[in-house]
Length: 220
Image (cartoon, rainbow, N blue to C red):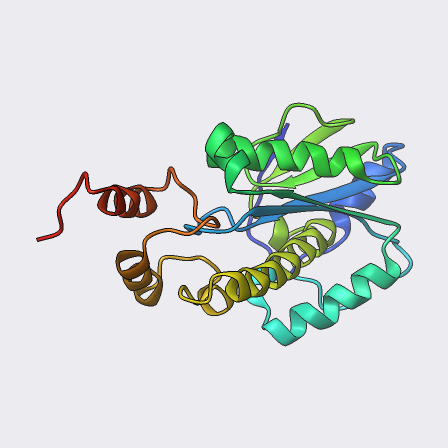
């Protein structure tokens, strides 16, 4: 099922309350971080909030500063009824493609919650197969549902921390700064050093860099 409505300025708990008024007991929000970068995993989180202890200031993680995300991350961990995180590494992305890997991780995350959900609110247009219950796609959901916003924050903070670990493993690329996105610095490093094990092989700039490394493409 797909929901769409006018754009909200801030997410709230209205979608969850509407479902609960219909008899749904446990509502989880699901969101991802890292679908677009050239390197690193896609990280998906599922969160079941406690309606009596929702941290103030929850919002789409992209609208928050790093400091705000870190603060809210701790508050979500401390107050949520259930949280799960699933990581789809470059190998999964290669085998399933980026959309398939994201949907797979969403289903896995919802299924991994310690508290089984009765409904899952998902950011975007797609409802993945394999959910433990009915899923509802919410376009712009991280700006409309606090459950999805919480999931977006957990996924983003987790992935950013992983990128700092990647940076220590492959310091030539600057992953701690650009988080794997195609910045000029990252593109120069790909040309100078070739891809590393954290890169997504099927993404065009990475595939071209591999071809150069393997000598199948000559750089003028």
